[in-house]
Image 1 (cartoon, one colour):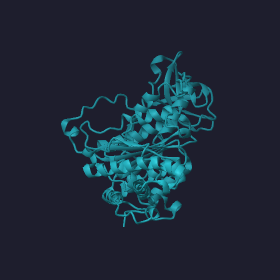
Image 2 (cartoon, helix red, strand yellow):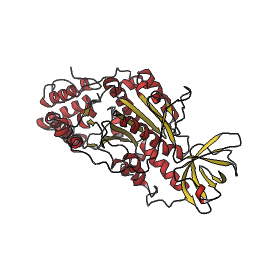
Image 3 (tube, one colour):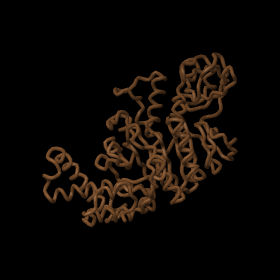
Image 4 (cartoon, one colour):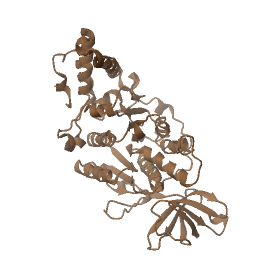
Length: 458
């Protein structure tokens, strides 16, 4: 038993009688406020005088000095298993969806002490890459989603990161009957509510587990909720299932870590972020991996908020070093009404390789990117001299690139309320065929407006 000796916002100091009684780092303690509200604490560091400095998981309002603190275990444990489908929980594994108590047979700790080194066997390394079809034209063509990979959707505020994430969930779960874990880190309560409503409406909720650490919660909850989500995904993977892990928004995880670091009095790095920035980003990302004798895989899609649209921000750079594919959203494309607003020239994908997607797909994607590069050069020229001054060959490339740009826009099923248009699921083959036809000149006589916000080419 320990006693509260100091409370500074979300930081709580608990004093114990002897050094043997102090819980280990990441150990959980429970205390109560004057109005008998439970507060959970996670040990962050040990101080002199038998004091454990803890980070509160929920609000410390009305917590008094000398309140008793009881150790609960070496780590936060959350319920796992099939009972978690269609449920919404917080970092502690408590239900927040008002559907009653979760009666799980098994619980798992959210912190992993040692990940260990998993040596991939020859059978795993020679295994053929499996491309997951998302039904979103621009993603399937230029940023193919490979089972077991990590994909980032990078963009500033209001560029459509959450909508793209929601559409991928909708398409993969409905078309491929996949299992999904959604982790909401530091996002608005309204967005969580909308997500739940959309998943229920489209019948996806029974195949989805949802974890939320919302914007109004203390940094301890926003930081730890990422680990809760990773634990749920790992548990499904160990049952030989292929899991999709959606994280919205991983930047808030880093931001919560920076807040905790400041509260604990650590000296920030030169850029103002926590000195442990890379190790914290890797603690989460290293848990998302396949192999090690397990047939299941975890494929992660992470929304990354880019502060002030600055892609050189240290937190953003730390995150995208772990990603296989980067889809950068452009504010300029949003203003032009090109949705999804992925900028193909700023983005990159390690999976766009002939060995992964096949020679035809790879060749068409390279031709499309080449057309976009040339279009970008010509667009700047057209702004100065006008389109009529271009040579016939350049004019042809310019027109075809604009048609492809419009063809790669698409109405989403999850955005029907905003666009008023029925959403389309477009198979990869239809996307490749459409781009091939436009590049070959079969549609040169058609106007570019005919290609805007359509499904497959007709």
